Amino acid sequence: MADLQRSWTRGWRGIGGRDDGAGVRDALLAAYGEPQRHYHTLQHLHECIDRLETCIDLATRPAEVETALWFHDAVYDVLRRDNERRSADWARQAVLENGVPADVADRIDALVMATRHATTPAAGDQQLLVDIDLAILGAEPERFAEYERQIRNEYAHVAEPEFKAKRRAILAGFLARDRIYATPRLRAELEQRARANLSLAIAGDVA
Image 1 (cartoon, rainbow, N blue to C red):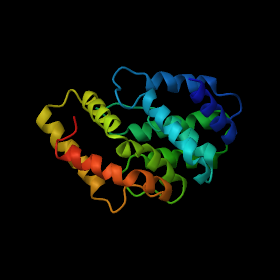
Image 2 (cartoon, rainbow, N blue to C red):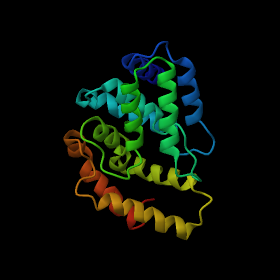
Image 3 (cartoon, one colour):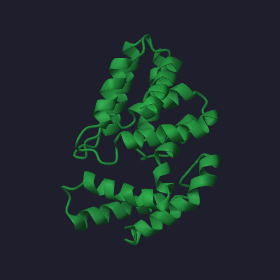
């Protein structure tokens, strides 16, 4: 947990939080530990923060990116379609209540909403944050296979044929993109492996 504590302190102080934000941090940690989660957990948050630390020099406003990563899956309910909006609302309320300027709150809100993956993120910090969120697609094959199992567990209530059809469609959408990763550094590291992982998953060849 020490790495997460460092990350939280770095981001929160960087955006100008009035106090240490411990209450907000603890509420977020509890949220990532909710029992319905199998992928969108503290493991995912850890992986995002670890990835950010390898490319934080690419961020225009690194503290805002780091704080947004903490909030990007703060609300996660597979039966709803507004998780990102609710997560962004939580982020906005939390930072404004702790004295963070409104323009910073606006940018954090936009960063969280970019993780809907519904549209092309704006250049710069939004692209970086989305690439970090999608880094799992370019993970080593063993971790990618674990990720696929974790997603299946989150949708255990969905019948297998329906799940497979919808999952393949989602993965095919990423594979059809000209570029999965917008950030040159992450693209150089992850693009080829992500395409291989996605191709195998769509073919049903991921264990």
